[in-house]
Length: 126
Image (cartoon, rainbow, N blue to C red):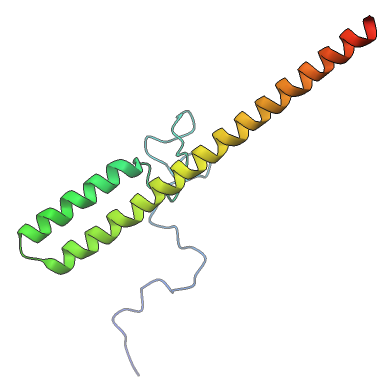
């Protein structure tokens, strides 16, 4: 007969996996400062909320520091991160320019249509 010392351990797939959490009165896990009344909400969950330009600067600084410490591989890693965020900056800038061009084209088309309508009204009233 085998007497296992760990036979009081919880099974891996048992449904009572939340024993370690204390529940509050309404049956939900407590959520720290971000409870029901809080206005905290992340804009893009899963993404870093920092500015891409700041991240480029951050990783360039880290690469410089790693290189000064003699770690060329870590420095190259940081430079690759920096390059990634600089590409994001470029794509954001291209998107912004595209949106501005589309907006300008829409405004110009609207002005053109309005002037044509005014000309038609003037010719019909004469």
